[in-house]
Length: 108
Length: 116
Image 1 (spheres, rainbow over the protein chains, first blue to last red):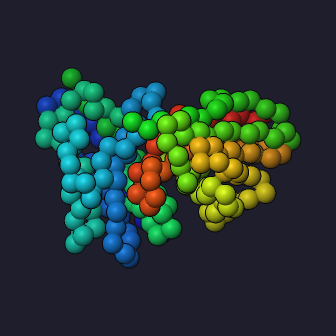
Image 2 (cartoon, rainbow over the protein chains, first blue to last red):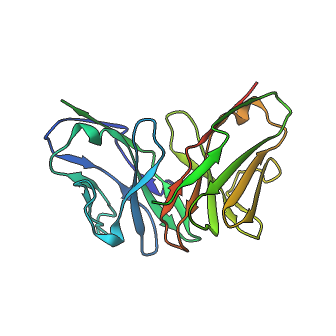
């Protein structure tokens, strides 16, 4: 069973538009969730984690246990935000499980 | 920030040969490293968890005799693909965990393996 679901393979928005990358999870315990990002020709890197409750590069993500979601949001997209975004869940045994990823394309 | 280096970045080998991929944490010690496999346009699939000084923990469906993992020091883990076949061709990515049980991973740049 898929533990991390990212329903959109591709999300295309115009510069300045709001962005929401969806992520839903399935986990019986207390979840720890992350967003990782991979820019073109670069390695995967941590964007943010829910326990830190910080905003990185204008992105925020709120854990909603009722909806089992951890959507990534940014009010005004910028062209440099174009990248592949992965939602990830830290499972028992300290294993990080990734969603399928969503490509974000920000058009000028 | 923390840096993880993988080597080689790409390798081509003949079917039946073995290939070793190294993963090094350059400026921090990593008790735990992870090896992933990524197929084209797909997500990362966790292959195994590499623990320094002990045996690796393999995910279901991953052949431990096929993918040998050694984590002999706190800064180096190696993945050896033994008797490689064309179906082993893939992008292999390692990551090292900063701290213990933090989930904060730093990733290598990946290694592209092509088996002819």
